[in-house]
Length: 380
Image 1 (spheres, helix red, strand yellow):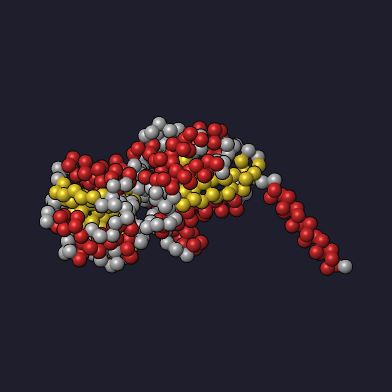
Image 2 (image 1 turned 180 degrees about the horizontal axis):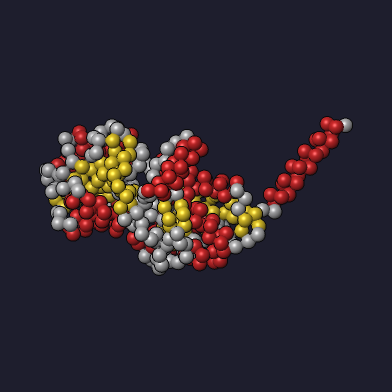
């Protein structure tokens, strides 16, 4: 008899729990990154950051407008392709998401941003750095990292003033990100009194760089800048070594990953690569970022690549705006999101300007030693 009673109580508890959860307000938030293709490791890193923020928000019983909320992550793969990016953007709009974190690349974020804007859905990119992204006049578009003007400009000045570059070559992959950051690098080199000895182009799918590197070798370069991603940079560094090109290799956040040493097959010399990540913390704030890295590793048993902390912050900023507005409806929480001021994230304190850009965005300069990233400095 006692056994039957226990079974009845257990069954009732399950039904009650189901009824309670059925009353939760479900809020769908989209996330888009390339989880297939050459930079899938970066896209998966982003997606894990999004999942971590969503799961933590659900675990602490987030309330919006007096109702308990269950957040659902709708994760999509844009493969780093602009056409696929607009396709998944339309898919998320049709799914009635309340906001989108992404996309990873500028080349997919920019065309997708019009779709989200037309639908009135807020979009926060954790990593799109092309200035155009936030300069289209859309009220729904935000980013939590510094743009290419800051990124390329800082690296250009560094190449001339700190690396003492006399013969500087520039290569870009012709994507919105790669071309944009290379143009800003070039401007800053010239403004700093340096000169560009050679300019070459490749694609984001290329694997053979013999022709362009041979042309560059003739200029006896001491610095080579690459505007693109780590999946291309790694083999390029390997082929530089094969051709006997002994130059510093400089790039933006697209190459600044934990995977770069592996992608270059051990061809990098200590201190040869200098890259900048769009973001950075120092002093007391560094403890928060270090803690995130530890929690991320404990949860997923992999190291952070580049952008997952920025995804994590972007998701938490969006959720915080919903909570403060007392609504997950885009039209109601968007004005609150736009006024985000001094949000204490793991990547630092975040505020948005009138364009949706992060105010006073930091950059962190890194090199690689012993196959590991080694921080040089945080600059603003």
